[in-house]
Image 1 (cartoon, one colour):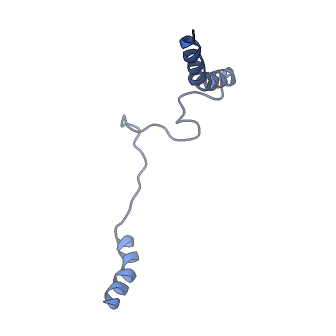
Image 2 (cartoon, rainbow, N blue to C red; image 1 turned 135 degrees about the horizontal axis):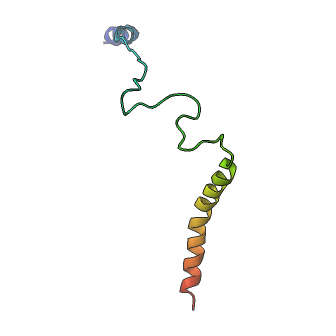
Image 3 (cartoon, rainbow, N blue to C red; image 1 turned 135 degrees about the vertical axis):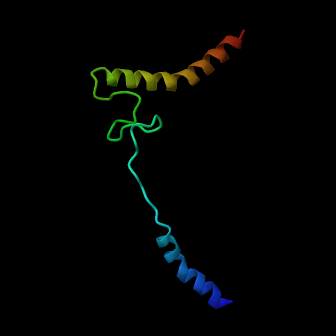
Length: 79
């Protein structure tokens, strides 16, 4: 029993080595692959002039909205 488990543990790395994993470059002609590289996966361009204003406006709105709505709901229901 011990010899069998030792045999399986010893042969495991060779099984992985024989599988022949391959990686190929993404083919850009496919609609499911996009260009690679820095900032290519972002839905905005951080190098444009108004990026900081848009970014902080978006973050401020996303942070304020839930809390602002909660305060508005509590004040709306008070007599």
